[in-house]
Length: 79
Image (cartoon, rainbow, N blue to C red):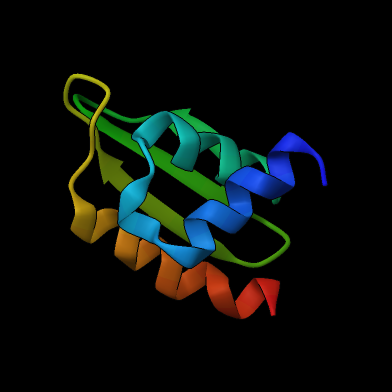
């Protein structure tokens, strides 16, 4: 199992245990494109799965509620 799979597995087991940088790596590894929005918001878009996320990031941290929302939306993709 490579490092990307381990990181993704860690996120799927407990989404609030990871840092924003790990969340970003997970989203990019499953096909999302990162785009800087205005201010503190980072946008992720997947043309394949037709999903979009907007995550506010402050000091390289995001709130747990955003991690949980991402988890709820992408768990259907990965199953």
